[in-house]
Amino acid sequence: MQYHGGEGGAPPKKYHLVALAASAGGLSALATVLGRLPRSFPLPVAIVQHIDPNKESLMASILGRRTALHVQQAVDSDSMSVGHVYVAPPGMHMVICPGNAIHLTHSAPVHFVRPSADLLFESAARSSGAVIAVVLTGNGMDGAAGAAVVRSAGGLVIAQDQATSAFFGMPHAAIISGVVDFVLPLEEIGPALIDLAGSKPL
Image (cartoon, rainbow, N blue to C red; front, side, top):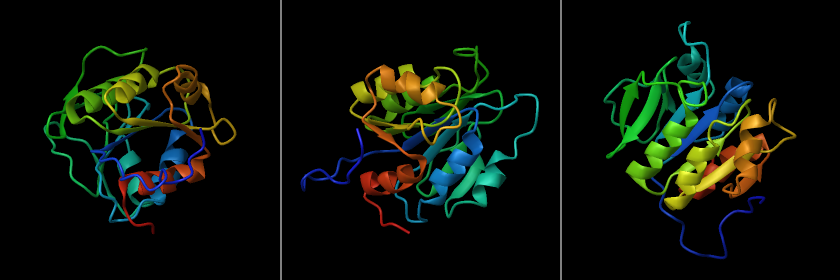
């Protein structure tokens, strides 16, 4: 399940967005992935990171210093744009609606967490069709069920490998569910996204 670039000259698949999910150890992992993406990256990016819901999040500003893309905390009814990264606010689920519109909700936690990777992945797949879901370092199993929906909707799933994961729970749960297309070291995820999205490297 390693990634080796384009498949035998076949035309690239058209993806509509990238959804990244992380928990423990995620800030550094997200910064590494986003840091490899060029300003010309042709897909919007949505992020769910499990963080303390009772504290103001500085994640958008921290990640914004590590990438050429524009990073912002998601706002309800935002319409996702190319070249932008949208981070779920603390304690809010981020749901992707038709047209890549964002809906934020304070509905019940999923697998004891809010925001939920499963809700992000599932809603993105159902609203946008072929999406790329990436499961990064973290404890628990959030993201595995959503990754299955992504695959069934014609999308693609990447999981961070054990050697580079600070915590392997989330990637492992997705991998053993049988829906992961590629298991990659952290440093290879950004370049894979560039290739899959059909954009030019840095």
